[in-house]
Image (cartoon, rainbow, N blue to C red):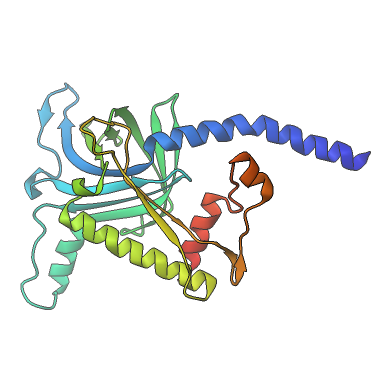
Amino acid sequence: MRAFVCSLGVAMIGLLTAPDILADRVANLRFAGVWKLVAEETRAPNGQVVAGPNAASGGRFGFITYDPAGYMGVVLAWNRRPAFKGKASTPEDARAALAAYNSYWGSYTVNDTRGIVTHQTMGAVSPAFAGTNQERGFTIDGNRLTLRPPNLANGDQRALTWERVPDLPSLTEAGRQALAGLLVDVLKRFDRLFDAETPYMLWIHQRPFDGKDWPDARLHVEIVTPWRAPGVTRFVAAGELGSGVYFNPVAPDAAAQSLRDAV
């Protein structure tokens, strides 16, 4: 009887929390994908457009990525990054290069009621930035995401507009090179995770090429291995084959953590 009550309690907790989990997943899917920075704007408290803090450097370019499991990362570089004076950088060169680049990664949560996405940083170029919560106001309009950081000390409000990358041709040459490097890194992590050359299947999902807009399309890559553990094959159950519904034995966030740990 005690076991039954305990099981019933666990089931009730699951029922109570399931809607919240589902809501989180739905919110994450709205953000999921790779977004390219396409515009920055700074407005004074009176609403007038003014020169932003990065105007002197010719603005910035970069990408921000969100995944459905709740992880994110952003990379930004200034258009006019100073070049090194020689083959080796001087301390001054290094400081100038670092001042014209920013990157951080971590997890994220979405609060639709407040219109806020919170970036919970785990690592960053600046050590002082790591471990902080960065709140950004947001709006999503079709394939565009606008993020609004907190106001500057003088009251100026900044807005960064990102456009979802829908397909491989929409990536820049640098973006395609970065994606190729990322794929090589991930596949090597699979080998380290299973301590062997791991078989895999890979799909690239992107916008259909039928001439339509497809504003919700996003470029993403899916990789599946038939192994569930080193040397252990995952077999598909009869119930899965009969129903056409297949179960993933590993939660996506747990799989992502395993790959991050496979260094």
